Amino acid sequence: MNKSAHVYRWLLLTTLLLLEVVACKPASTVFLDSGPLVPAKVVKVIDGDTIEVRMGDSDYLITYLGIDAPETLGNAKPGDILGDGSFAAKASQRNKELVGGQTVYLERDVSETDGRDGLLRYVWLEDGKMVNSVLVAEGYARAASLPPDTLYADQLLELEQGARRNRLGLWALIPEEESKTEPNHGSQ
Image (cartoon, rainbow, N blue to C red; front, side):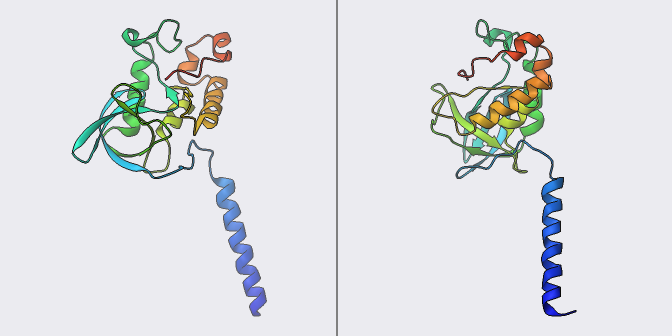
């Protein structure tokens, strides 16, 4: 076999392998990160969208950016479809399954804090999945864009629409006509 035929076969094989990898890759809830990620050890899962982490010698409360998980009955705001308390424990448990005891990677958007005690962050796993997006895609939280922190707002809203359409998680508990109406995506 001459050299050009060998190069051609190698290029063809490489192209076919790349096509196979791309074609077989399942759709996922992974987004590209936009900047430096800060590692942190999860020491406690507070609820469906809040964790406590250790960075260095200090512990910090982390509120997940871009999402709103169901609240317990005592923490619900009037009229909040996620606030009947029935799904809060499930959302918290799923969050614990995803991050409990693990090292996670924190990404900041624009705001540093939530105005209370928590840092606002997107939370990433070792495998490259964003916890915020997994919770929305599986129906354990809804998208909750709060400007100026909108880095992944479009992707999270798209994942919520998929969860609503497929009646996943909390969307299976909400009457279908309520599930089809657009919620207020401005609370966090």
